[in-house]
Length: 166
Image (cartoon, rainbow, N blue to C red; front, side):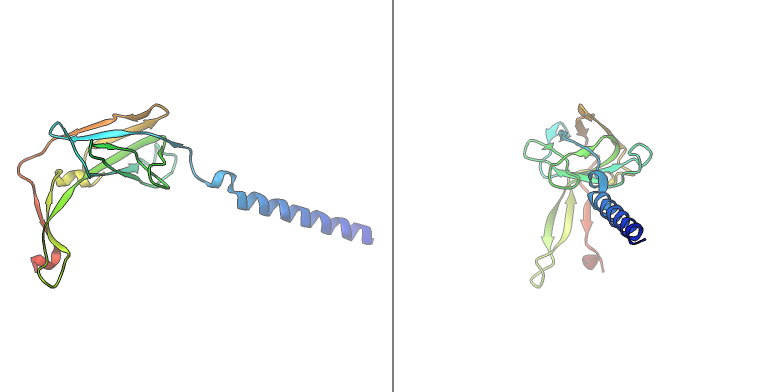
């Protein structure tokens, strides 16, 4: 009888070790395969430096993967998105895209060094992936389209911080 107890205990311990190993390994960490992709942002035909480019997965296309990706354009308007780290790529699928750049115009006076006014360099509607109208597909070949050729619409918009507006 002690042999049966020992065998059952041994099987239970072995099962527990195997289950714990499988559970902690996570079968790839739950992260999808990332694709290195690069793109370019132009505003009125010129490269746009210092713009933030955000990618929001389209849920139905990304198989439920919902982590956004982002990048910042360099002096030539080029960018490489990152999802878990800087410039590590993004999963294949369709994305809604936002592009935004704004610059500070002034500070909150002598008591504050925080800007209280900003000038939008890109049209403000482009800052939200749901209103920008920009979409991209990521495949093993990269981004399609790889170039966002944006146009200014009227004079730059000025944003006043809530503290200044009061």
